[in-house]
Image 1 (cartoon, rainbow, N blue to C red):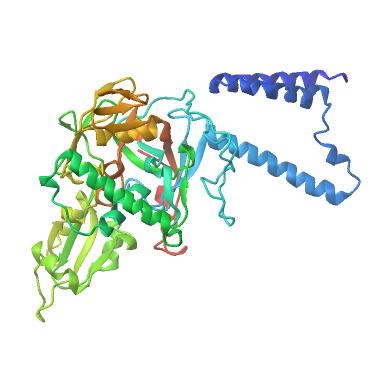
Image 2: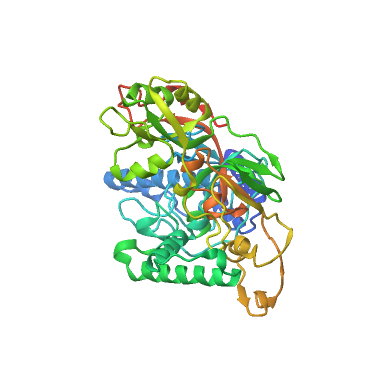
Length: 494
């Protein structure tokens, strides 16, 4: 072995110590196989890591220097992305006005502790699909079990959290941006069996049979028509879409929503300052000027002017009946409004005639799809949020709420038989949860697909906590007319 210098030994010692501390942090003994390679890089130099530098051809040296730099950058980004922070862009208005469409965030993986990846062999910065190529950005083998290394704390109530979409394990590719596979299959099954069913008159067993019928028919429809729905894929936890919502319910809480107010264990929680609901706004006869929309902060995507005459009966049923001298209904807008925005519009009597909250008829099917509850987005529950180590007695009324936790998230085989419930082949009426779960909701309550629609967020789906908005772009404006929201740059996320 060649004689190493004192400087080389010092570098080797520092790098090895830092690497060993990293292995202790992530609790990985397998990582020790890298130590001999570190020794070779700094001390023994048996492997010609940089042999390309001795090439006579300058083109080879130039190309390989770029390859070397790119590989190093990708490896660095890979580890930073997994263990320290991740960039995330707000794609939808579900958290407005707390976070805006066009906000770019740094998401801290350290806040709740980074996860060891389920799919370690993946391309950095690509969630599940490679741009341009359209292929998977990860290899399905190997897949590691869930493990989270120590972080700075745990998820707290009212934290804004980035997480992997729980219902995103199965996706119909052409619909992955609009709805989850299970809701899609159920709705397609309902469409196939178009005759309405009076659920009130059915037993729980009969209701379950109706759901199974709808889901099976819808699933077959999707699988048999890949040209319409796209390929149906399964994705590991860390390759599911990233969502961002506010945590309103913690493990062990009993959550209920009463007239839009979230209650925990019977007590109202503090609402976000910029909580929004949808309203129908009728003017006195003129249109709302763009300057007022800008002042209120309502984006063009959220400005819906209702001009279709087919809406008239619905609008009249809501009391929006003001007419012009020509007999036509005065303009009606469908808008998401905070309390401040609602007050500002209501006080403008010259422009605004009447404001009505959006009725529940506009909401979709609530979670769980296979339990008839008559819950809606403003009046939901109560539901108990599972906590790690807690044991629940299973009944016909609560099994649909928790069966996805038991089967899909915790990997058990659950069967309903004539004589009872079987978990992993054993008859039982109890289940002890292996993970903590959370209830996530958007601040834009009527424009948020959240836990009310797809249920609990398991702890192994939690990605991190948004810390700071480092850039914010308003797509409704040009570069010379306020496209960059300067007042949001480097704003801490509350």
